[in-house]
Image 1: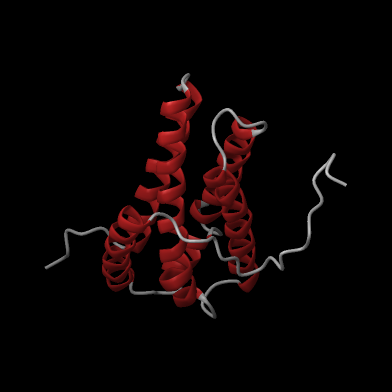
Image 2: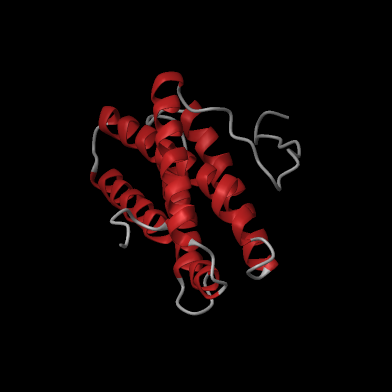
Length: 175
C-alpha cells in the first residue's frame, strides 16, 4: 500500500509554493506591521526548508547527481541566508529593506527553477538516480516538525553558511 504522505520532492515543492505565496503577499502589503510579520514567516519557512535540504536531501543526493548542481544549490542557500540574517536584524522602515526582500524573492525563484527543472534539474536527477523519496520524505517531515517547533519557541538561529567565508564588508559611508 502506497503512503499518502508526500515524498521528499512533493514536500519540497509544497514548501516552494508556500514561500512563493508569501512573497506575493509581501508585494501587496502596505503597512510595516504586516510586512514585518510576512518577512518573519518567509525567513522561518526558508530557514526550515534549507536545513532539511542541507541535513537530509542534499547529502542523500551527493554522488548520485551532478556535483555542480549540488554545489550551486549550497551557494544559493548561503546567499539567501545572508539576506535572511539582514532582514531578521532589520525592520520594514529601514533603507533597502524592500529591496532585500525583492532580491531574496528573485534568488529563491532562480533556486526553485533549478531544482524543479524537468529532466536536468536536481529533483529530476534525484528521481532518475533512484533515491528512496518516500523514506527521505518521512525523515524530512519529522525534521521539519522539530525545527518548526524549535524556531517557534526560540526564534531563528544564527544563519550558518557552508560556502561563504565571511569576508569583511565595508559599508558605504562608514569608512
